[in-house]
Length: 82
Figure (cartoon, one colour):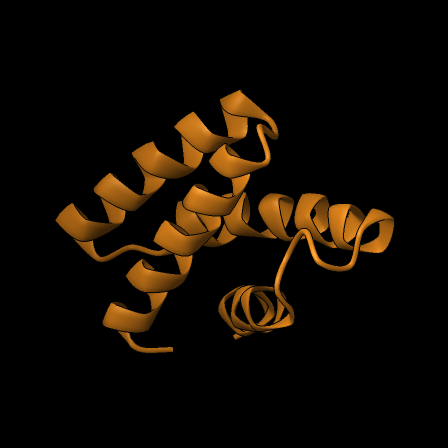
């Protein structure tokens, strides 16, 4: 995943978490990790927090399929698994 795609995916994830009012602390941690990544290009924190967001969004999608797009789930999976 390119740097641009990583940033875009994390920003989309943050927007969705905010819209669905899910885990405010995770949103704050992911925002911090994204800023850190943009500074030092080390994706470890972003990947760790994105995996937590992925689990949360997958469970929300199971409850209500239209709540979270399939593309966002797929993009997060690419980020976390690569």
